[in-house]
Image (cartoon, helix red, strand yellow):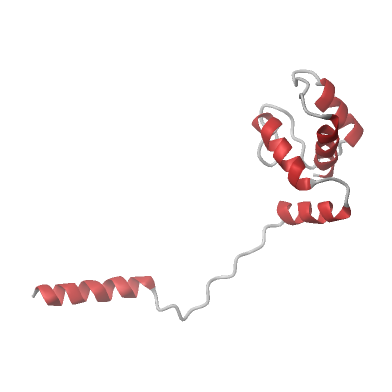
Length: 117
């Protein structure tokens, strides 16, 4: 009887896993792929998207959100921000945002990247 129950349990477990003959459902690509956009922008040579994203995550993410959607601070994505204005805000602060203490080259790269989002 134990062997029969064990065999039945094995059959049920294996059938629950599926036969593997069916193709996996195709994943739909998101409407906007930020990684692909960053790679394309980086190839254009305007800024270093990887470094800018790292700087953003270290300095801006807490207030402006993981996807620049805003939160404690204003939304940055999809807004038409001039890179020079963004740079000025990063270096000098504005309203409740304090100045961010990063090298000017890093601030310029970050401002270019934010402007492109």
